[in-house]
Length: 526
Ligand code: ADP
Ligand code: ZN
Image (cartoon, rainbow, N blue to C red):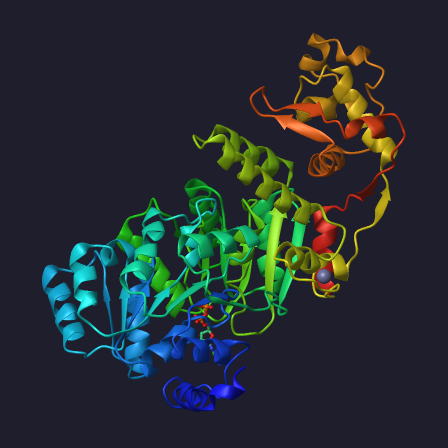
């Protein structure tokens, strides 16, 4: 494919080397650049850090006119423009942070043909004023960055993105290149459909990030485990710690600082100036640990982030992969570490249930959460599991926790039967804590009040710890033998799939419980 268009390839390669200072294109960059230079539409799916920007920057320099980059990341535009200016590319941006005078100045430069690239926020681009200006200009291309924002089911949905289909209608001869790091088939189809990219060539890069080591550990005391992990493996390294709530972000940052680790908080509830200041420090200084909600990170280009940690369960594998993908962009060894427990499952399920979204949306969110749980509970290679989710076949990687220290599985049929029959005997009306108390034979007030100490299953599981029973319960939830009824105090219920196990017709393999400290000790030695 790239051979039959040697001339543009040569020119593109020349710019790559002389302007950007890189010796060669990475993976599919060359083909993409070529295709767009020749006026074709493209859909580019490349993992975070894969090098999407050059795919539109170089064609914009080669094609006549100005390249328009649609991006929702207003906070990053200044940095992007500055970085381009440093290598001599004439770039500017248009967004709501500018004064009217600044906007007029950019518009003037555009009219005079003095700009190679202009980054525009979607809401600005869609104004009558902007569209009319674009109509009188030569436009090299439209790059639609973070194209998954068009997906209503995704976690970054932006309503204005849907209206970007107007670009195709108003500028039918201008090539469009949509780019994203989120690549499940559903999102891909939605991008094509909503942006009218039916004729676009699709470039799907390998999603593998071989230098990232995936580890998912049982959560006991998450914060303490995080501290141990950082002290053991990442002393003085830059990293990101994701937490679900703003409060937990603040607490975690404070906790790490108390223990001598330079940590900063970042979440949407902070003052903009404070947030920007922390982001700038994270980017410019060495060895800062950013404690953040998922508000942080989209488009952040810091090559030497050595670890990404999750103290709470992400909502989906897409989210998890995008967040962990911020580690090790420079190609050197990096860690994706997560601590996860039964409480995470309960919390995420409850959030879905209690949200105001419609039923269809909730269903999609549940399916995504199930997939995330299955990744946490897998006894096979994490990477194989992740790549499979993105439609890519692979073989065990040797660089994730399950490959390095394979979980021991055992015939969990009897243990499962103990749990399932206890749930049945309490009429499927009680939550995990109570069920575990019964199994372990603990006569709490609640147990006595309901006379559950009289049940035949009372104390039949006294050989296992509470943490062990919870780990088993979680696996049965992930395997969908048990459902959690969030509308009724998180009561555990049996699903259809539980019956054959209860009757002894089906055997199930479960993962042997491994104490958190043990898992960590192993990592330290390796
Ligand atoms: P993405 O947008 O896909 O997350 P970027 O476009 O920000 O990725 O690129 C990630 C990093 O890789 C940047 O530091 C960029 O300069 C670098 N990079 C991109 N293409 C190449 C290349 N062909 N050779 C060397 N480095 C590259
Ligand atoms: Zn593996």
